[in-house]
Image (cartoon, rainbow, N blue to C red):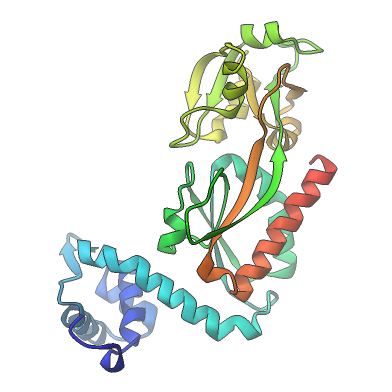
Length: 306
């Protein structure tokens, strides 16, 4: 930057954020309520301030330069802090239009959404829930400000992040009725004989249930691997495949799909579901409220087994 903070127009940061979101001068101007000419002038001022083109016309869109991408996370974080400072004292869930940005792997969606959405509809009807698939969480999305909260399996959190262990969830075997191999009670021999569909989130090297099996020198007969949980219940319902899923996920999908469950016939680690957030949102009133809603609903599900 060529100028110091005392002479820098902080409104340019809002304009930068609009350009990053809309990737076009006209759309960014519309977002800010100003004309295309005014937005073009603002972009010129941004380029001068940061001594970089920042956004380059590529077809119908404007793509950010490497410098713009570098600035994006820092500017987003700064705007988030300002927003929190201005709104901390008067956050009212009933009237707020706050956007809660949550990162999670898709297998956590059935754990959270059914009851949480009902709660938000009643107590925060104008708020928006924006969900981003995190894969195996490493912290980058929180550090960049892309999301405000992450629900993930996590052993250790990177520096600058806060965590709360919400619950430990056991795994069960999910299968269709009249399965040719799986009977009651489920034996280890039958479990290993069955053909398995294995769901693996992005970046996860080893499934939790396989950790338990490998400790005994055993392996499942995995014949289908999916990187999305969505197709797992359908494949289990329509084929002889079985799946090892969390108990809470099974409690949601099994009744809906007419499937059955049994506990795993061996000792397996449980899924540690952890809530993670960045230090900068620790005192944010909207995020404090939302974290409590998520925690309460997940703890209630844990107590009821649903």
